[in-house]
Image 1 (cartoon, rainbow, N blue to C red):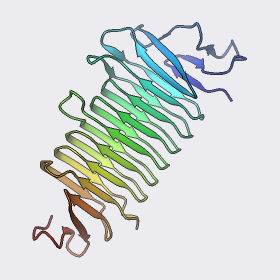
Image 2 (image 1 turned 30 degrees about the vertical axis):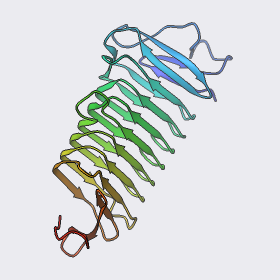
Image 3 (image 1 turned 90 degrees about the vertical axis):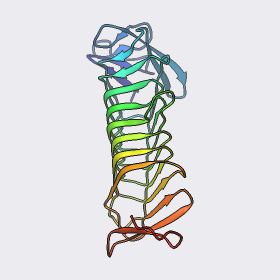
Length: 252
């Protein structure tokens, strides 16, 4: 089966020269546009990797992307002022990678089943992420933006997942799902919620030394889960629902 992407109303074949001309449009030599009519450019980097950009100065807006059940790497790129906005990206089953190097705003991303990777390099606002089943990896960075994640929801789904926030977060809800998971906050945290699996698997939350915590709620924790604040380790005590450490008299 050929790899295909659907851009809004047009379906494009990625790598099959013998495509059905009545059903698919070949990626080579055909224009792809977002809902504003802005021309999109898609470059084949080889080995199943593609780079998507827009000729518009503002970036890519009102774009719907649907991939099939084949492994795919998609990179969305632009300059420092570019934004991927009001968009929806849905990868099918299999092991996929999405790398977004522009700012992201008012968007939805779903990777479905598979060991998927998501990288956001320039911060996102009002983003909904659902990574479904699989051993998934996600990394979110702020770059020149104030927050790596703001007013957003991330669901890592079932599996042994790892999520890293390289910058400050605000009004974030992250559900690590079932499985043995690892979550790392490297920046400040404000009014955010973490949901652990409460599934008998050990989960680990790490918060960098020096990070300011102004409102963090951890739900679904159970005995065996671990919280690191800097180098100090806290164990979850289910008797009184607190995090305790041999090296710190405080309880959280």
